Image (cartoon, rainbow, N blue to C red):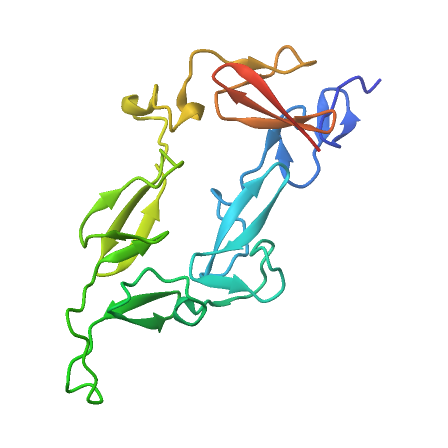
Length: 219
């Protein structure tokens, strides 16, 4: 008798053995396969792989846009996005924006450049109407975990890389998934445990073990 309980659409093929659907693994198909981390994706160099429960998708990198999807997800082709033409660059008004593949840079013109001259040209950055001096690092309003640095007019922002193996991230408010106070138990399979940061699907809800509690998101 096949009594093994298989999750996430898995099928019991014989006692104690589940045949998992693509994207899942584990004795009861309880674990997601991270195609991005295992390099099993087919995203092009101009896109990044985003892992989801049971699948993944490709998202265009900053400076690129999808030719098929306006929201830059599920991208099959990512093309350069001209920040200079649409005004999304961060160059100071006295500098000239020059579009590049996947980005842009700011430059000051001189008399030798087609007889044009930018007087008092500044290579500082502009963000929401405010000037940021060259070389300065800021934290954008309302985004305490993001760090942005101005370099010659280009404002580059990064979010923390949460390496949970580093002790400093154990109680970092920007890396809540690294708090490993305890494991989370599966709602039905009491022998299945999840570490902080792991996700699984239960009854059409995405569950995440975060600071030792269940977080539910409706499908």
